[in-house]
Length: 330
Image (cartoon, rainbow, N blue to C red; front, top):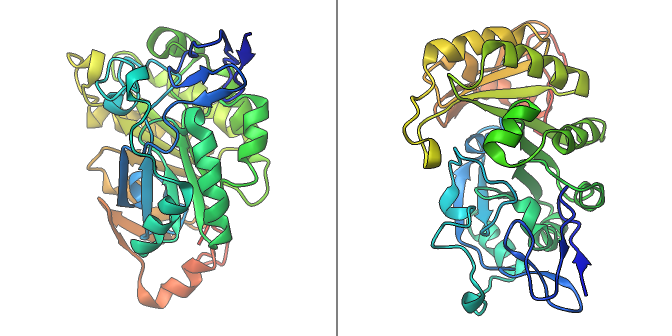
């Protein structure tokens, strides 16, 4: 009997004993299951800025966690060893009995690290969201914060499940639909649908990341995408340099010159907070008040500075110069 997986936009109809496109959702007769549930391949305390999340507890650390898996096949994947089916870590049928981490153990890890933020990241948690949500419930019970770093390709059903438990999202918006189809084996529309929905959700923070591949992305793409994101209600946009990786290992890295042109284009679209990623450009590492341009949080790499006399104001989410509200969780 075929069964449908509703974890992502693909809504795979899976034959008994077979798996969906992601390779980790399997029809085992009475249910579709995640074959690597609890098989945590990476767990580390990271600066939260590394996600990147600049508007969630700036300067704090988060416990980052990943299981294997993704429903995309991006040719430039920066974490292909944790996500793509040609990786030796891909959960083959004969590896089903690997050691499992229970959600309560994962929360204990977070507490042992002395942090109160859990991030589901590195691969794509949209395809192992059952483990993520089981863990997220316990994080909330412990008064913690849940962050999801994802391609955003939810099904409507899965986004409805996720929204009550995830406090902050970083969503990759990779390019136009032609780019998605050619380089990712996916499509843009479900991502934009999710972005629009999350932007309207009270109490949720969302940051968008676009990794720019010079020679494939053009500056006109940045203008087009920026207007689209602005209309969707996006407040925070990270534009990140590409470095050669995976099946685009021979492609040139994105230059700082091209990134600066893209940042200029992005600023003209009216999104309040624009940042540079994988860049030495410290100007676009600072969080500035969108009303008066006062620097609220300064960053150099993962070193974050909040002046002591300003810290109480920043934690309240207010500009210390003009009192304007600053987007985020503080």
